[in-house]
Image (tube, rainbow, N blue to C red; front, side, top):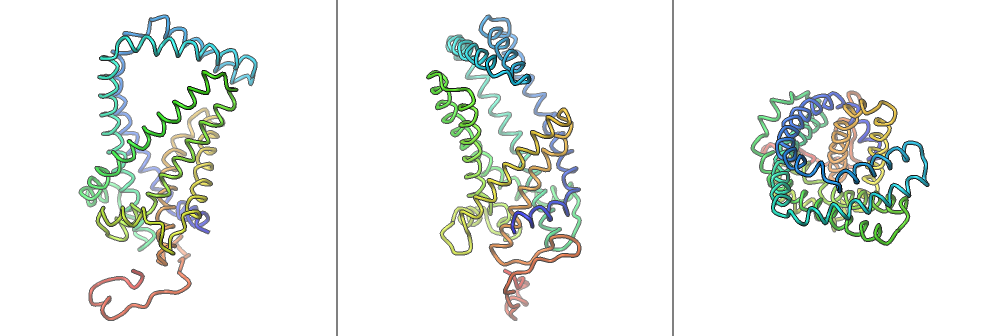
Length: 326
């Protein structure tokens, strides 16, 4: 039911997708300019080396074989990629200073980019919450400005933790895959293992942080309280396996949707599917929070989802200005 309700709430809030798209395009264009200014000089230094040329040719051969589904040619190209990549690592080891400085600056730009994109996600969450609770069509810019302080504090905590987690899982998974690659493991097995492990680890992260944003926006908790609530899966109201399984389905559907957009629309569909991916995940977070806490909400204009047992509004809650569903 949570998956179905999340999809209905997403459809009801679909116009937010276009606002998120515009916001993300502006941030990504600015970030691209910074990435180019940092990476382009470094790439100019190594672009004509034999190691980079060999790796580029091997990747081109692999891409051509993959497009033609020629698995024999893919195996040959994969062997060439492994050899060229090993030689490239050896070359980069001789210029550690430049590599470390470039990686550090790129990481700083990435953190700033992710922080700014996180402000957009917080704003989208606040807009979805307003629509689910009051049928209010809040403006994007107005909501961003109104919640700027809270959004900055949330992302100042979430972005470094999330980035550290992402780096750890990518490095650890990449090291394992590289070890298997040196051991001549089958190519299709490597692709399967990498994609499966990455999806599972990202699902774990989303499961534990699922209630953080709704607890801040709807629950009006502090970040400390929201974190404690989100990571506490020992309470009866919160079913870890249920949330985990829903995220697995959501991530696989989103992955298939974006791959289809690339293959069927030559990438043009990504302008809709990528921002829509973030919006539907945020919709699930709020639906999951409301369902777990027995909070009634609007699924669309004519449908209100009510808990099996609605809390009674007491005189104390009324005079304190609290909702009966809190």
